[in-house]
Image (cartoon, rainbow, N blue to C red; front, side):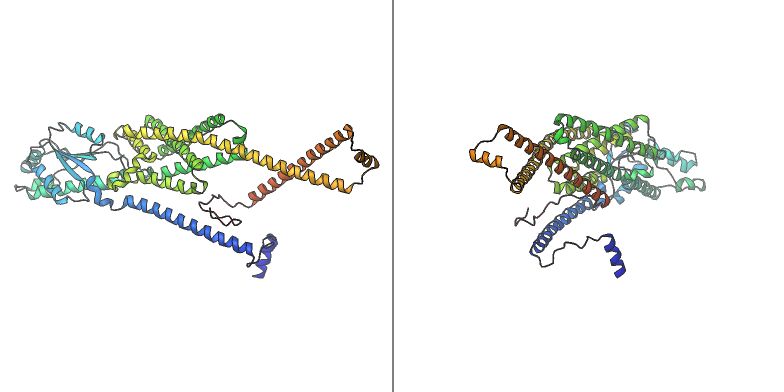
Length: 518
């Protein structure tokens, strides 16, 4: 143990130097302030993350009991009151529950042909459509009585759009429609007033095959992350680049040296270029791993532009956070922004409590609605509000971000003036001290004494003294500047060798030299 201790001490010999004893007043005061600050920040972080966990889990809570908000339109094109229609109605009566989609029956007069059902599902009037084809009951009966051939897939069918929340629709709609069809098959056979022949037994075992019309098949494995991981990565990508360029602007003192209009132009051009390339990478990744998904070149371009708008909106919005939100709260604002945006697209609002419809105003929900419309070839009629909401975020965030540049430039100039004034005061104090020491150490010459007695000094002597003072000031300023430069280099070298990681100011802090808590 002692050998390990000696090894550590040999590498870090100053680690134990200049430490105050535990009973020292300043150490007690600092410890008291530290405990107070860490307690306050402990509480606020726990409360914030508890609220975020509750927000996410609340959106998913009891979603099965809300499946009945998924509406399915049902049209019986067969003879009204026929065996097929009765079987479907009986099956729905036995399955009807909060955990089963609602079947809304319409007459053939309201939907004269199946194409009108396709349009209705495409317009998102309904989540799906179930219909019985004309003459279905007669075809099955003829096949059972005469053992005639028929097409079992030409009896009943349904229409849906898998691109709308594919993982949710697969479980909540498709599987339940299949269950409804199988239950209706059982009801149909039980109510059949017919003695089947041996030739018709295979038909009776499977009288129909449910025909699926999927407006946009979405079966690739990567579909499960389109509405969560993709959104999170885009948000984090913008935040990290924003932090990078903000650090570079501060490091090179551009806010104090460049005009605000020039900075606004360059920042926006920079952010547009960065989000342009970043959105291209996201779209290319989706395209590369589409696994047979029908993805046209036009959809690629539109997806790219949509991600570009979304990325730039978030870049500007996060920049607004870093400008106008107190620095200690920026991390909390970031994680809250991410969680709220992702939660707005995890599930359709039909499966979440009504409170979560506030997600309509968040960019992530609108971008997902726009992408669904693109991917399903226009079958998600939400662009009337999704694009305006995105553009409102873009304009408002652009204005506030631009105002923030003026704010940063203002405070940067004040900081530079304050540093220059402090440096000037240090130089003046040092010059005065050196001149005083020089006067005290040097003996006065007889000429100087005589001049002091007569009360006169030559202009030449005065100018020489001023020149010496100016030279001394310049020399001292150069020495101090070189010392400051050396100190900065040593500090930077030390930070590079010992990386403490990212650090954010805390919402609550306490100055150990003050009795007040901030």
